Image 1 (cartoon, rainbow, N blue to C red):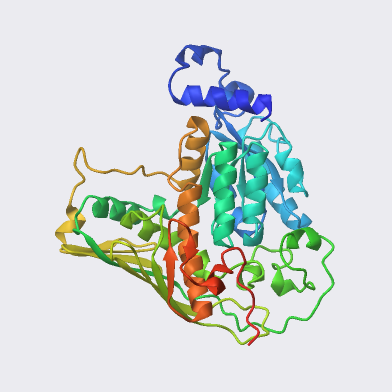
Image 2 (image 1 turned 180 degrees about the vertical axis):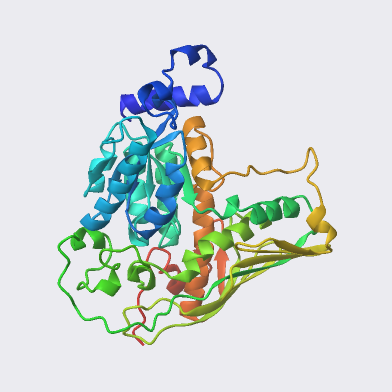
Length: 444
């Protein structure tokens, strides 16, 4: 690890523990540096943003921009237009924080390796298409960077295992970039369930929105736009001729076509599943294990379509404690039924329960409590303290694996038994072949 980065992290960790109060007078006030809305430089975490698409532009960068203890010093993308838009937004934002009206502290990069090579960067936020997630995260860890990784974090179960090893070998902080544990309704649901308000869990139901419309227009081969390094965009994915609906809209931040192409993404089963199945795993206490049986069915687009992810699906899991979980396309919700009642939470809404007294129950001193803070703050706090995040690499791997297991069961069309300790299907070579292979397009 670069000596400079280690010194910064060691100082921040000590400061976060309260052990350096004697140095307070030596820290230059941020206002004296012309950045009155930012913390002093010694108290900031420097972040590089890799991937400048829709999710970064509308979600991830705006969240970091509001954090006084974070400064974004790099942004990287293979699309020059997108890179320029995000870079300009970052510079404009930080210019408004100071007294001189300009800012030039964030560098734009076309090659992610330049970001990872910089000793002045503490952490990276990876917001690329899914097929780049694990390769970039592993390289970042080996370069000494802490990692916040956009969900879904993996394309396969074996990728998740490699990710865990890399993070632990490099002793890096990791956070799944999902905000659902920060939602007040799901946070309260988890506390109520963990403290026995519905009794013993018997069954769980999880819903996600129906998939994108995959019955898209024709997709003829097209010239690669001058602003796009298409070879690097494809990266570890199979090579294919360029067409705009395979990648993302030109000169805008609209919903990208790659989210509907199995070469790069598994569709809604992992995309929203990484949010809501995580809440189910959290409440159930199975966030570091998995199911023992899986069955599933789904509807695919006709073979030969570019947009070829599942349209709708329904998966049933059984866990070792006998709990069953139904996972389906409908609306974004989690419902948990127990021996003494049930509780229901829906994305963007409140909670419902039966009996209604569950909703007004207070968590008492000595009962289980979870921190309630944004996913970004959870990540940055752990970077400072070197502690664990609420969704570390193992939790993220197990949640995404749950989605992958359902996807595999749907593709094979038969019940599967799974050993969650060994992370292998029981006596099923065909299913085990998918453990380290992204779901291919259907040919028939």
